[in-house]
Length: 365
Image (cartoon, rainbow, N blue to C red; front, top):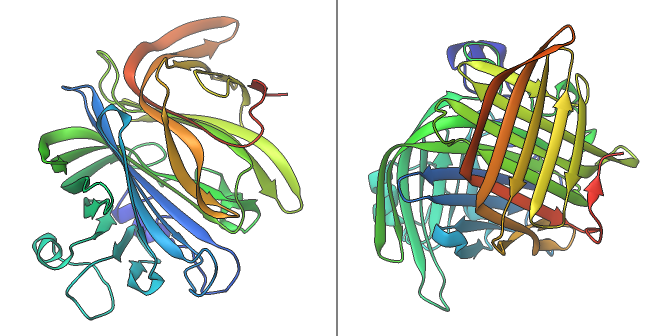
């Protein structure tokens, strides 16, 4: 359970950092996302971990690790044995062992021990991401190990961090839940992608997660924490059609961390509008009593299909690029006047659409 005292001691730990499965046999998934951006070469690595129906013995029980690599290339490895998955209920820490010479229940290993004993698998915390996976069919592989220094969780610096979906997210009302774990951090280490080794120091890093027993019908997402000539800035925005008790609702939000301050545009404090194509263009505007923001994300790239948990298990149901172009403008409102706080752009924005029902442009009503 999340505790306030722990949050004061570690002011970047967010609510929902721990593992959510309650041990029941109900349909359940939890997924984690780690991203590292390498501005010098204009590339990004994204690591996606998931577990479904961890009680085992169900049609979709099992886990997976996916990597979106340079030029939006893709690698995936599944881990059918749920007993080789572990996660901490109180903080961000998880892992899944695939091929290993250890005959013991899984747990966190020192990085050197992990490298020695685990031939396929991963482990990840708030300060470490490590793993190795390969595709048996092609021989393509990825091996990675990097340390993370969190800078922004989800909220103002040196304050209690916030739930991305508000306080109601502590109740099993919204399905799935969504939490930004680290809006911005600095990563140092290496990634070995099919024999090409990328070494980096203080590269922009990001983390989020989702969980629940139901799955969004449709969603979109924008994420960027490297901008041209604007350091110390991180953006995450997204929206979805999700279940709330017995009905479906469409919601969206924009969150910006800039120079120690958190600018939050969510349904309970702002008017949030969106105009999203099935692929190629993402437009959002939001306004509250103090600020307004405009975002436009575009890409001419085809994007890469990714797997995500669904009612039918882990299937290809979303499309991503990590090389989207983003324009962002944030303004402060005083009376009838509007003052630009920030106007910037990036060519390393993560863009995604997923789910069904993308025959037409999705506009907020």
